[in-house]
Structures are given as structure tokens and as C-alpha cells.
Amino acid sequence: MTGAGVYTDKLSGTVFAPSGDALEVGPNNIFKRNVRLLAEMDDGNFLFMQYGGRTKPNEIFTEKAAKGEVVNGDEVYFMIQPSFETSSLKYNWLNESIFVGKMTSVLMPTAGADGQVSYSIAKVS
Image 1 (cartoon, rainbow, N blue to C red):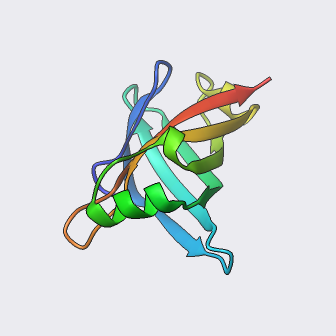
Image 2 (image 1 turned 60 degrees about the horizontal axis):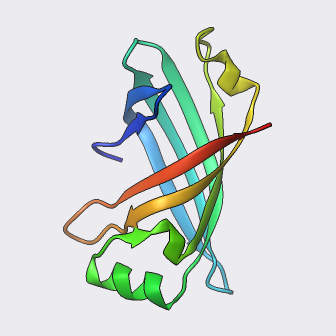
């Protein structure tokens, strides 16, 4: 993962190595995500984020991904369940909470370019 970041109204930071993601395509063509990332927040605190998730590709997703076009969140089922770990007291609320997320836009990686994904993540109350 290069050039990645964590940007919200409550968090802002830069992802660094070792971080990465894996995508498993199941026999029913459902994409299973396995993502682990480390981020240094702008205030110097560190955050570990991991998430699994599912994407159910459809015709729109497949066509846009093949053309290198951005797929919007309302065009495909693409959900995640992130969890966070930090030793920071400032961000301790992340350790104690459950979250769900929906992709808002994705550009799939190609041989010549990195991919990019954005999520809307909500705390479950």
C-alpha cells in the first residue's frame, strides 16, 4: 500500500509499511477482503486497523473495473467490518467500539496503477 492515508473528521494519518491487503475470490465469485494497515496519525499516535469484508461483483462493477473507471458505492455491494487497535488514550474509543463500513468509491488496481478505495465507516451504537 503506497500513498494511502486515513482521513476523517476525527482522524488523519499516513499508512506505512508493513501494511497490505489480500483479496480472495470465492467459488461463488464473492470477493473476500483481508486488510491490515498501520498508520501514524498527524499528532504522532499510532493506529492499527484491520478489516474483512465482502464485495459481490455485478455487471456494472465488472465493466467499470475492466475499463479502469471509478465504481461508486451505490453501484455494487461492497461492505467491510473494520476494527482498530491503539495504545493512545486519545483514540482509545476506537478500541472499545464496533464499526461497519460501506465503500463510497473504488478504483481497482491495474498493472500500471495503484488502486484507491474510500469508505463511509460508522460506529455501531
